[in-house]
View 1 (tube, rainbow, N blue to C red):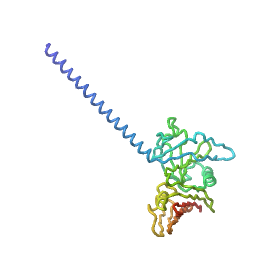
View 2 (spheres, helix red, strand yellow):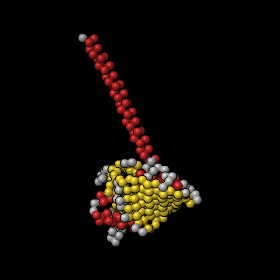
View 3 (cartoon, helix red, strand yellow):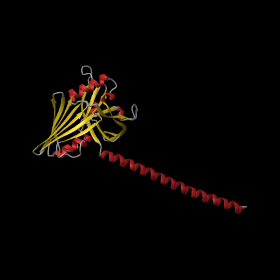
View 4 (tube, one colour):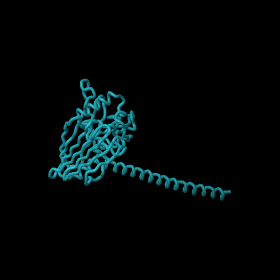
Length: 286
């Protein structure tokens, strides 16, 4: 009887030791998996940081100019970075957003808001609001833990501006340039039935400026443009999503691009001036 009891205790002791060893190994494996996931997450965020677009406060305009005074203190030092669906505020990851491209009239809840924005963009930014706009919406709208929700819930993009609304004011953020070698001097110009912007970009080439228009989406539907400047005059028939066609006129040291939309015309003129390039972009309403 004593021998059986000793044998029982021996087996029980061995079982407990093996169980303890297995638990330690399992915990070690779980920790390894968790650490690996954390490293992967950090790597993904770091990759996003390198490729994100940078937006800084530019200007504030009241929707009703006679009744509102815009409070912009919280926006002045704000830096917003966007990479894919991720938003970074002052260099720290903040929130995820929904991205979409919709009709301009669908973005605004009321027609009077659409008309107000059309006027503000034309008068204060020399921009014609296009038929379709790219926009984002915070996935954590009304969430107290959302850092982005402290500043805005929705935003839309036109040219090199991001527009949000806060307390009856249109807040504009401008895309900051990270290319110091090709510094640009720009001025807004008024044209009949439209608006424009003329920039002198230093120490660059026609090809680089043309490619930047596409990569930076400086004009609507820039993605349909050929990646390289055409060698001869040509026309691209599109007839899709509001874009009818694109016409190219090529000369020595100069290229003209005319994009015909259902609601207007976008004209791009690139001209070589010694080591610099003069880039003119005009928007005309029908």
